[in-house]
Amino acid sequence: MIEFSFIPLFTWLVSLLAVPAILLCRKKPDVREGVTFLAAFLKLGMVFMMLPLIRDGKILHFRFGEILPGIPIEFRVDGLGILFALVASSLWILTTLYSVGYMRGLKEHDQTRFFAYFAISLSATIGVAFAGNLLTLYIFYEILSLSTYPLVIHHGDKEARTGGRTYLSHLLGTSVAFVLPAMIYCYWKSGTDINFTEGAFLDGKIGSSDGLIVLLAFTLGFAKSGLMPFHSWLPNAMVAPTPVSALLHAVAVVKVGVFCVLRIFTGVFDTDFLQKLNVGTVITYIAAFTIIVSSLIALTQDNLKRRLAFSTIGQLAYIVLGVSFLSSNGVTGSVMHIAMHAFGKITLFFCAGAIFVASGKKYISQMVGLGKQMPITMIAFLIGSLSIIGLPPFGGAWSKWYLFLGALDANQTAMVIVLVISSLLNIAYLLPIPVNALFRSPSQKDGKDSDSGIKEAPLACLIPLCITALAGLLFFLFPGLGFELAQLITK
Image (cartoon, rainbow, N blue to C red; front, side, top):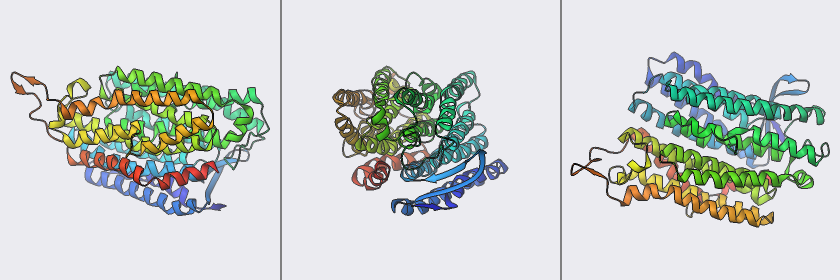
């Protein structure tokens, strides 16, 4: 049942309306950050207001303006949208708290600008989550690219500017070169109907050849999903401060990429139509290649944030892989992995930032024995790693289980092998970090413990990583909500 509501509009607006207040309070950091927290809690509260309605099978919508004939800016909140909004809005609160500790701890410059663009980015993320048609999705996707660019180049040095140029040119270049023509083609073939409704709006209007080209254009054009060969922007964006990396790699940017791919598979085509066209296998093998190669590259990285970046590329490809199976279990695994990976990976980035704030260390080879001085941080890193790997009793076990089932449903035995190999590679590039930190002795210099003066990061950094690590356990024990929302999409 579709029901008109203003709540999606207000949920999108609240972080946008906070921006002027943040800018006006630049000389009062406590007030500025208070405004950020207020907007974040209001956004999460409004998402929770919509949740019971979505669980009852309702779809909320709101529309305004008309960009093209018959195509307004439209919000449409369904199971997939509310799940993504829950992840983004809840993690915005924790990332804000973490940012306060990180930015103040390192005495970062331009903190007001940072929080302002942070709020705009979350508004764009919610715009994507609630997009009711292809044009609305595309507009907010581009706004997110532009609003996160100042965050990527925050440090303002040559390395930051170079990374920022790569970031923006890759994301805008692929969307303009691939997504825009594909969207225009859909607009033409569908008779101007590009709304995300039940079933595919392209069903019966294109053949296999056209379908494959359009599907590839959308999947690769939404390069925030990190699929190879359009992935290099992601490790280059590691020049940003760690809270930005956490935002990019766990919440807003990369999850918007895979969210858009899921929308294309389920809202533009739908899995039944794609099975008729028999075009999903191409995406399956692109995703599998990305998973294995990115995991192998991650093994070679000594810089912790770059290792986590290549890990993210592989984990995002899991989500694309699952939906490409075109089965109910595969889609369920993909949808659940959005939330499971978000909380697991943001834990790892929070830990990386806490280590840097407390010790100045950013290379894995420097972290041997660091668990003696930072036990809470390294235990949280261990928990986040186990969740990403997909081992019980942590949340990632559920999403990987459904990905395995999806591969079996699709008779993709080769992909079962890919999932097993990639999980072993996950263990190889993640577990040695906390194990060496917790169970090996720190290096010594001149007969003294070189890390003797290091202690845990400030509480504002420590509390969020503890909460997100705990969430990994709770997602395993209580997977019902994620599974329920995934089922709304696969019905």
